[in-house]
Each structure stands twice: as structure tokens, then as C-alpha cells.
Image (cartoon, rainbow, N blue to C red):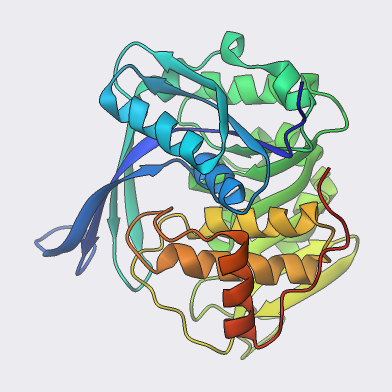
Length: 330
């Protein structure tokens, strides 16, 4: 079996995104723009890596409807191996997303076929021949149990990339020990880290290390600072092997239309750097540039770049060329 670099596993959704003037608890606000887009956190990351030329595959479930066919087709068109995407009777998963330019979002999920994915649908051989397994959350406990079983039965050579998102992070670390113990790298934003550990950055990252995670990457929103680096606006914080990296926001302002999928794009950029042997600071900067592509238009995947476009934007925003990779993926 041909070896794939990254296998994604998570929910597959059709995103109904509405860009609104304000996200309300009650009242009325106007819709500025809307559209229907392919989505799902791990699927977005897998799609982005395929666009960058990385050999990827995906495992998940869609319904036997036009929406499911669209999701499979768009992954395949990007170069993702979709042999692990199964078709279930009933509707494809859906997400209603309210987003505004300031970065706030509200997401409402209807899991559909995602809630039917079972262990019998998992191609263990496909996963065990990959370099990374990238996991994101499901709403259902049965699907989380499938993921837990997979990471215990897959080959020990496979590195786990874990993006718990708000769904899993809200459950706290005691429910996610099996993931964190196995994780080579975990991707969270600052709010998710607080939900997961009950601690702030960097204390929360250290707790993830205590649980077994090798590398912890915490993305920070516009205007967020850390008490450890007062006055410095950061793109992200990375902790690895007892070392901390505080990666500043680029000097060039980003265009923000929709933050849906920004973290997924960041994870893709970071993994892309790891696969090519870059140091974690370079990986983080690549991730930050990828996120800038994602937020520039409505939809998580609308503006995701090729490798050439990524290199050009890296040069444009950071004023230096993207370093040459230390190795070439086999």
C-alpha cells in the first residue's frame, strides 16, 4: 500500500456560513454575506495539506445525498485519497456558522452521517502506513471511542496530531488523557487550553506535557497577549522539549473576512513544516501565513494556497524567503 503522509479523521460537514454585523444573545442583526462551503476541522487541514502537495487521505462519513457527494468530490479534486470516506444512509453533517470580522463565531452542528461512523468503517492498514494521523472532534461519544481505539491499535510509528477544538476541550483533560498521552503535537487556541486544563498559557501547556504530549501549539487571536510576554502581540505560543517559543504576529496587517477554519489552516502549515524538517518556529510562521489565507474570504478552504503561493506570501508578509526544507518527503 502506498504510504500517505497524513491521514485525517473527523467530522465532515457542509458549512452554511453567515457573515453578520453582530453575534447576539437576543435581538436582530443583518447578514452581510453568506454561502455554503465544505467543512469539518480535520477535513479542512487534510485538504490544505493536499493543496500544498502533501500525500494525504481522509477517514469519515457522509450521507447518501448531493451534499455528501460534494464533500467527497472536493477532497478528491484537491488530491486527497478518499477511499476511507464511507457513505451512510441519511443526511450529511451540517454546520450553521455565524461569523463576524472581529473574529467572533457561533457554530451550531447537526452531525448527520458523522454520528454513524463505526469501527468497522476504519481502515487501520491505511492509518498504520501513514506518518501522521490528524484527529479533530466528533459530537458523539461513540465516534470518540472509535478514535480512542484507533490510536491504541495503529502502528506505534504513526505520530498523532490532535486538534480537540471546543467540543473535546470543554470535556476537560480527564476525558482526553488517552489522546494527550499519545499526541506528538496538539493544536489549541488559548480559550480551548483554558477549557482543557483550567490553566492559562504557558501553565496549561506544561500540564499537557505532564500528560504525555510532546509539542503543544497554542494559537492566539488578534490583540491577545500573554502575561509571560506583556505588550507583545503573538501569533502563537509553542512548547517543546522544555523550550518555549513566543512567535510574534507579522508586521503586515491581515485581511479578516471570516475566521472559520483559521486554526485548521494553521495546523496544516505547521504539519507541512514538520514533514519537511523545519524547526518549530518556522513551522509556526508557516502556520500563521496559512491562517491568513483562510481568513481572507468566506469559507474555510476558499483561499487555501499551493506551495508556490505559500512561499510567495511568506516572503511578502515576513520579508524573508521561506527557508529551504531540510528533507524531502518520501
